Image (cartoon, rainbow, N blue to C red; front, side):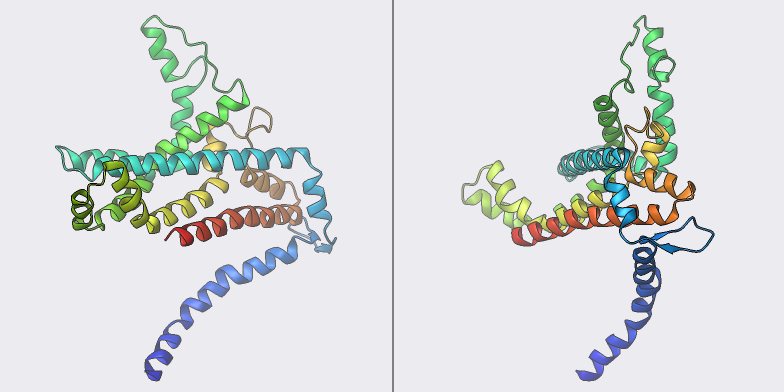
Length: 285
């Protein structure tokens, strides 16, 4: 037994080394650089917590936190609801089931940057494809989805959900297919309704799938970059700019030390809800 444990520990060394080189070391370096005034080229000067103070005194940066969090909440919630709904429908056999699954999942394999540009050309106010189609049928669309902050955020969330709901569906579908049919039959024999079966059998046994989807959706939504960059470029002004876009712009603006500090803040913003979701799903299971 001891030899077996030693063998497992020995085999884990390469993975531990890769983890240390590509995650732990960059994280330590990032923490170190976040306390410096570095332009990416010259000498890094230690400035303490000045970068963090500057961030929390910057109204643009605080607005980016608001946009990022709102986008993440809306996307994560809708992705799980829509993905679960798709999975519940797709677990039942019907004609063209395989084709429908492919159609739902297909957007997820397309680059989000390309997908964003496709939707931009479709929704572009005054000259987009949807506007031209409506004009062809004698209707004039006056709605400007970039006219207000709330409309723009809703469009961004819906485009993101449309693209990645298929990925969420696949994970839920795998979870549903792993649930034994005998459990459902036993619940029906005990007189449970469909809603009771869903709440007392399906949801508890889907906890591992829920955990995976919630965590991946939170991480992906809070670190959003491509879709916002292609659809709005963070505009109008900086109203829909995410923290990832802000970090990129600060880095290319010769404020590498400051952008690293913002990246550390984003890391914590992502880490907190992930740990909370792990705690909640663990309690549920």
